[in-house]
Image (tube, rainbow, N blue to C red; front, side, top):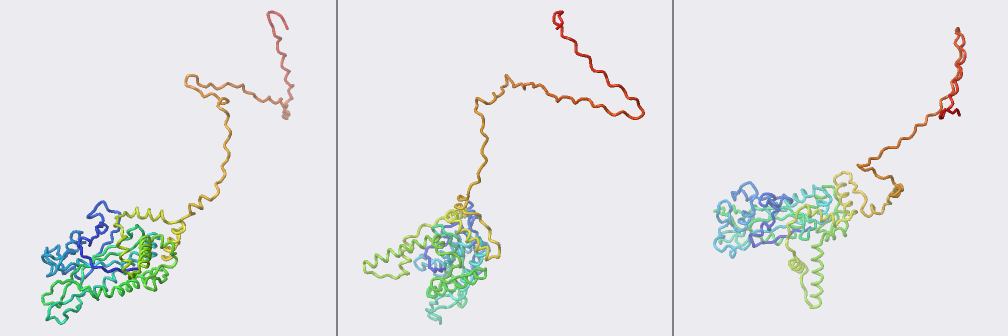
Length: 411
């Protein structure tokens, strides 16, 4: 569980070059991706923006200090060389969930988890808008000069992704908070830049708040959780460490780089803060973000999973939903070890020379006529005479056959 807060100076990074924010609309070829884009904040009506989602070009204009609707500057200080005078384009607030939560959502099949992640992220953005959206007054006559005055209005866009740079299941939300707010206590009710000093100081408090919100919503779905990292994060009970490490390739890469850097620093007699060291190693070893289709991602995850791990995740997700866990059948190893039933022996055929010759068209096979053999007739049985009728004598015997004659001689 982690929450990162960073000030971005490049307006082009607001869309991160990913068409997953706008599937099928601005990039028709990329249709197999997550269409979970939202915008939040009470400043959007004051910007006179349309109700639909902004395009990537409009997002870059907002991050660059331009209003896409009025074609004017958002703040009074954005004129001329705006990047020098006010380099912060937007605030990047990234909300990442524990690995076990991502596994049960993307592989286990529990679709409710995405809604819980979205709800927890909305709570974090609402807290940021309520307590950390403000300005730093600069006028001498202002009583809050060089201090912090809350405004309670931001304009933010957020979108959800489910993969890491290494292609592992990694459910996270990107929040881009534009560096503009409305100071209603100002006489001219002007748009001003956000004062971010307080938010960066309380970044750990924001992370702990996000952890508590997500943990409560995951428990409400029927899962049991166990604390990790000294209570600053959590994992879902039942998902083993080995399975979590298998799908945490990016974390394992950073961990190995930090260990190697510590050995070199120890040999050179140097000391370096562990958090700063992790950030340096992460930046140095960060691969380029790839746009992957959901079908390709799921095929990759299926190849990396074993049958037992897949059955475990599906069972945990089904039990939390109160459903009967589906049986995925035997594993490929068990199916290969089962005895194969014996087949009946084939009848021995005669050799080709002993077989009957096949009939041809020129000499069709004529069936051989065989004599019919009839059984001998039974001897006649004398029936009893009926009363009132005289008995008839038996018939005379048949005459003997005539002798054979050959050329007038009697044999």
